[in-house]
Image (cartoon, rainbow, N blue to C red; front, side, top):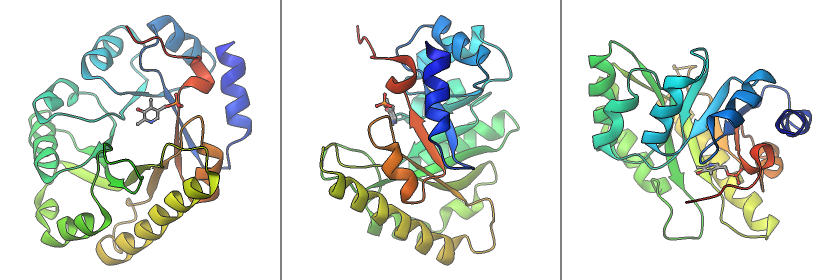
Length: 222
Ligand SMILES: *Cc1c(COP(=O)(O)O)cnc(C)c1O
């Protein structure tokens, strides 16, 4: 079932779009099944769960952290995490730099942008993002590499609104790339799109989609 779902999603992806299999709340057996079907990139949103799964699953899995991250928890994933999707403060960026240095690693991150209508979602507002990058502290952080932006669209059935949220992020990405990363080709990722809206996201420049329930089924929170 999981293998079939995975293939169905993959068939719909544009060439070059990376699939992050979002496995939060699913047991290791489910991840193993996806792994056996060829999936290597997994996304988790709780630190304890990520660490517990990383310990028992194959070592060539590429782990992405996609959730809201508290600074005091960075140290648990610093030894192995590949990409942290939702960096939304300089404080967090500094902590990732510090913990990555301890592990003698460079950790790749995405800056989360807030464009959705909901007030509860995390992320930099576009103006805040520009101001933060302008301030330039990130340039001195040798152990974090900012490789792009991440965003979530408004949680709505209105596809026009969803498309305009994603388009807004794509425009911002272009502006940020031109102004701050023109000489850094590693700034190239746009993490947008979940089960319900990844088809729209990839029409608006997404390079990385985070798909959970379409692969693993409904999550049972307990
Ligand atoms: C849970 C989650 C997803 C996956 O959501 P689905 O609707 O199950 O595909 C994607 N991105 C983030 C940030 C998430 O927390």
